[in-house]
Image (tube, rainbow, N blue to C red):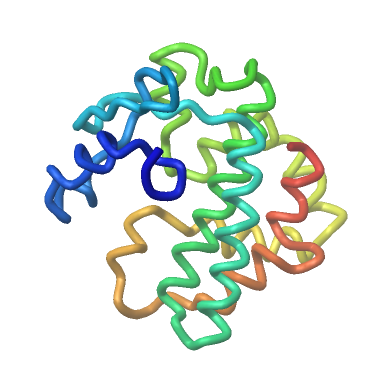
Length: 184
């Protein structure tokens, strides 16, 4: 065994990559024998996720968004707040699959790996429920109005994003994340 439980040959494999490659690389465990992991370069290999993974990611991104908003980093807070909702919706979708089979087939996968929140809401089969709940919970409707405007390209914005509003819309007691948690 090497450093922190990693095999020394694995560490040597990692040192063959440049920093920019490590930024782009998707590490895929292709074999596990005697605590040795093999790595491949590339971004085409799908990453298997379970519902719990998405739930943890949603909670983590929501907390990170809150910290950024409190620190005055509104653009980052906005992006991570939307990402938290994306992960939460994917947890709802993953609930419909067997563990680590998210998503089950290739055509469905193309839809599920979307970053469009309204599309993910449909795939989670929650659109009708949200419409119904927004009629009796006006603050939820207001919060969804803020959140649904999010898109993944907001990570490239340097101004005009209000992370505090997004964080409130996601994390409030009548926030979008709290509502989604009822179904995941």
